[in-house]
Length: 150
Image (cartoon, rainbow, N blue to C red; front, side, top):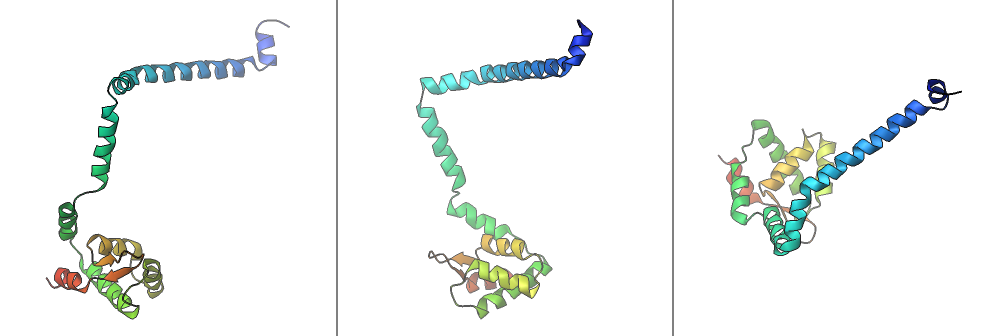
C-alpha cells in the first residue's frame, strides 16, 4: 500500500494537521516573544524601572483618604436603597455595638431584604458601616443621619 491509501489507513491526515498546528503555534509564540523583547532588554539595562513600576502599582491600589471621601460622598441612594439602609440600621441595633458582617448579612437574608450583598457593600463604601480594627464593624450613626437627613 502506497500513496494516499497509506496516509488514510494510518491516520496521516490527523497527524499532519496536529503537526502543522504545533508548528504554527510555535511560530506565533516566537513572534510574540520577539515583539516584546525590547521591553525586557530595557529592564535589563535599567533595573530601577522595575522598582518604579511596583511603586506606581502600590500607589494605585491605595487611594488617598480625600479620594475615598469624595467617592463615599458622591453615592446617591434611591428610595428603595434608603429603606433597605434603614432596615440594616435596625438589624445592626439588635446586635452588639461591634458586630460581624457575616452575621449582619445572615440576618438581612433571613429578613428578606432586597439585594443584601450589594446594599451592604454600598453601606461599607459610604462608611456608614466602619471597621473597628479587631475584625468587627460598627454602625456610624452620625454618618447615617448626615447622609439620610437630606
